[in-house]
Length: 213
Image (tube, rainbow, N blue to C red; front, side, top):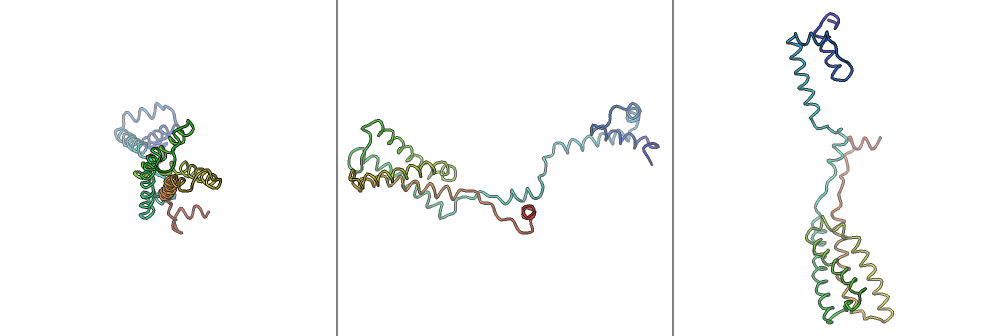
């Protein structure tokens, strides 16, 4: 039966088009809706289904879901994680000891006698504190600490080599910078172990097919 001969079908087609913004007011269809129980029930059911669809969270395509599911952020591997935390903890403890010994003049040397030296000591203390925090939470903190620690260790080692070769300082005094180097190594290992790993998608998966295309 066509909409021209069936007022219920015509009214329901009009309601559907109106919900899609494709139809305006129609007094004839509205009058039928007000008098027809079946069409009134159909309209209420349609409204309920429309609300459910609008409130439902959108479903991503299968290829996207498979790609997201293949990405994991694992805890650091057992060996690398334990090694990194051990190195960071050792750097924090030994660095604190070196600072105290240098301040009292028993080992190494202190820079507290000048403004520039105090700034250098403050940076070293901050790095030692960073090593301690990274040993506590390597997965969260090591990645941010690593670039600064590596750069500070590289510059310190380069300057130490220059000073030792020029005879300005004894090699044994430069060993006081060893905690900084160890901490930089520990931060690097911890940062590397905390990187997210994406599993390779199976050959017949939608992800592989999408990339192959």
